[in-house]
Image 1 (cartoon, rainbow, N blue to C red):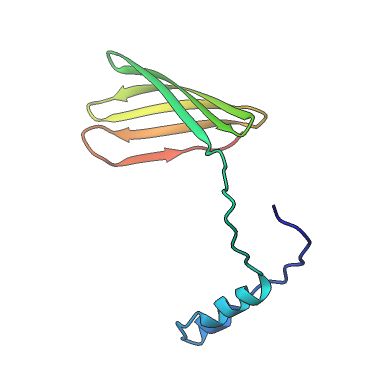
Image 2: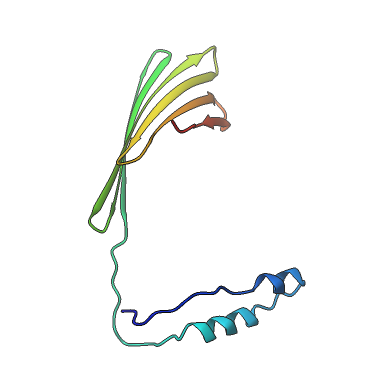
Amino acid sequence: MVKGTFNYTGLDVARDYFNDSLDISAAIDSLKTILVVEETQQSYRTNLPTKFYITAMYELSTWQFGASLFGEMQREDFFPALTVQIQKLLGRSIWLGANYTAYQSSTTHIGLTVRMQKTVFRVLSSPTI
């Protein structure tokens, strides 16, 4: 438990780096002066955020359809998102697609995808609407 208040005014560590000095002892000394660290034998517990992804793809000739469900649990809050996508094979190696993502209590996103088959190169664009 943190007790008391403190007004943070910052640390001036940039001047040491711009003067070609790699010694950060001045910054460490400043932190020790500002922060009074007290060691105790008390344990500390916190919940780590839990994330999950569920994705499904279906390919029908030159079309691909997909959906992804994402969820993150932070403390007592749950943050879901859903993405649906469609892609079309153009020619022999280029896929053109679009996706739509909806977040809880947030704006939606529409993305465009250009993908080259048989390579690891992928170009993505995802403007926010």
